[in-house]
Length: 178
Length: 178
Image 1: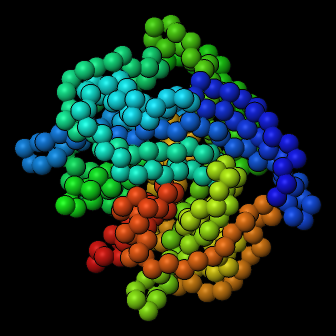
Image 2: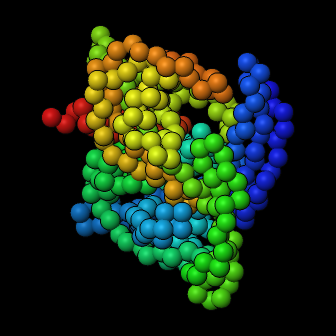
Image 3: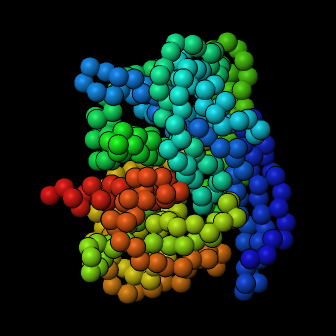
């Protein structure tokens, strides 16, 4: 495919919309919108509970859904922000804790058909209270859940946020692998 | 939060960008972009291989990434299209097979911080050759992979597409649960 033109048609505070005019091999013209995105840190903050590991989860209002959903903490990186600095900042803003240790489990694209949003997954441990003020447009409540229960929900389609399903399942595998 | 204004600023062939002006509880003004999306079917087409179940996978060029990646078949629904009709159409377009049976495993949001894109996951079985022409802007190659190998990759962060990680892991759980 040949690119005929490529323009940024909207810039938000964290991502932008690019629109490309393309010509296919048959000479057909196609218009495609693409989200240019700086990426997201996805966090699984762990603490020891009485019955095993527990995860700090969020109950968060999402404007795009007009719904409040259960998710792991996560946040958009600044374009030039260091990934680990972003992870610590988002953890403090969203949960009120800092972590002494972040372990990178992997990375994945959220929706590569329309966006280059890369999600980088960290397990955060050795937590200690150290809050930062959150974004004024975020409506968040903190909840503590047993990892084993979340893993059951993630395996059987009862957790409805993609990054949370992957974060919980890969964390469960990581902890059970010596 | 109070909505001051809400406008569609771009319409593509499958999704559109809405931009909202919001006022927070403190009277602060915030601009947020939101993708309005008709949703996606995510397919795990299974066939019996010599060593166990195999999955029809795609090696697909993604404009947003400017990269070719390994994914399960998937496709965007038309705004008024029936989900199962969409599943059968996308399966035929992308793999050249139709399925006699689709089993809904669950659904999840791809990236609820910016989009209402809902991904609905189906296991497709009893496959039979029955191709439909694909989209002219899609560059796809079909590959057959053992499910067990994909599940290992998904568990350990070696598959980098969110819907594929979830599709493979939930399918592996589904098949191992009598």
